[in-house]
Length: 317
Image (cartoon, rainbow, N blue to C red; front, side, top):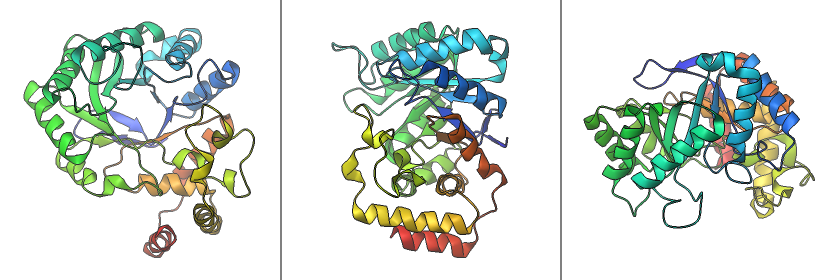
C-alpha cells in the first residue's frame, strides 16, 4: 500500500480507503461485508469511512462495522483510521439534521456507541448547513476533539468559500481542519473550480467520494443495467436515467482507452482522481472482495502521459 500525508498533519492515509456508504447495512449480506472489511485491512487499507445514516436502515452500517471490530479487529485498533460524519437527516424532529451543536455532538455519541468505540479518528461535518452559523458548527467539531470523542475533524461537500471560512474558524480555535471529503470523478468535476486551490492554500487533505460515479465508471454498464447493480436497486443512489446514450458512449470510449493502458476502466478512473496533488486518498465503495482487488491495481499502474490526459479530456468534453 502507498500512504500519503494528509495535508499539514502527521497523519498518513492509504491511497485507497474503503467507504461503507453502500453494502454494509442490515439489508446486505453480513458475511460478504465482513469479508470485504477484513480483506481490505489485510491489503493495507487502514482507513474505513462511515456516517451516522449509512445503511439502510440508518445507523446499521456503523453497528455492523462495530461487530466486525469487536470480533476480528479489536487487537488492531491502533492500526486503523475510522471516520464518521453527521449533517444529513438521521432522526425525526428538529435535532436530528443539520449543523447544530446539539445534533453533531449527540450524533457523535450515538456513532461511538454503535461502533463500540471510545473515539473515532476523524469526525466530519457532513454538509454545510445554511441555517446554522458556521461558528456553531465548527465550535461543535472543536468540542468533539477537545472532549476526546475524535482525534481530528473534517468537512464534507463544502464549497470553496465556506471551506476557507471553516478552516479559518477552526484554526483560530486551535483545532485545524484536517481533511475535506468532496464528491469528485471524471463525470463530476466541480472541485476543480476553486476548491482544490483552497485545499492547497489551507494545507488540508482531500479524500474524494464516488470516484467511480456510483459505478458508471466501470465496465458494469457497457451493455445495459445488470440486475445486481446500484442502478437496479430500489435503495440505490444511481438512477437508471443517469445512463443516457451520450454517457454510455463516453463510458465505452474510456473503457477502450483503459484497455490500451492495460487497466480496467475502474482502475483508470481511480488513478485519474488520484493524479491531483491535493488528493490524499481515494474513497472507494465495494460490493465484493474482487472490487477491492481491482482498485488496488492502481498501485502498480503507469503514470498518465500528457497525451493520455488530453485524450481523456476530449472524451469527457
